[in-house]
Image (tube, rainbow, N blue to C red; front, side, top):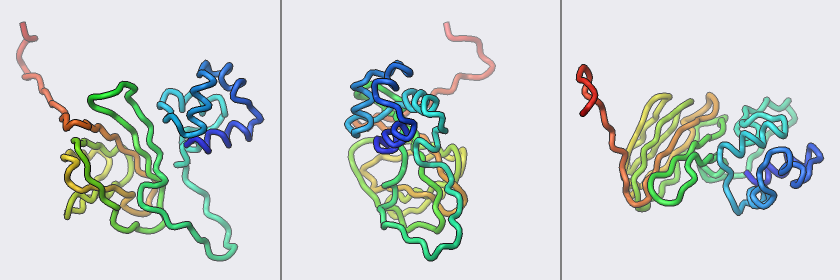
Length: 194
């Protein structure tokens, strides 16, 4: 994310000081974001996208790419699944549940099975757009917009764009110490609790 932000700023001939004055974001914060020592919040990304006159998708590198005219075979550097995703933190505090929006770019061919990891914690995810391949242990699930999944992260897990058709956007709520969401449904037809 940092290099894209720096490139967007430099293409407009703007300095960090000028961007800081225009947006109200501190100079040190902008510098740390561009060098990768700090992840930008969604609020900061929205301010920078507006200041640079580009869309959030362009800034995050998730905008669909126009097909290239036939100029010979295209080659891509091999990447592990998920290496090119954009992660936008939606919570700012330390500890407790963390919420992030993840955006996986469009792919032009079905991917290999996602690389899996396991660690302490508990995760809940909700697909907002597209089709997400969730490899959970030995299971393979394809989730669509509106689908949710929750699991303990000690189970090996990984995600990828499920195939051609556009980017995938999903929310992740993660409890590093195994915190889980506590759904509460009010009793319908009853008055407010006293």
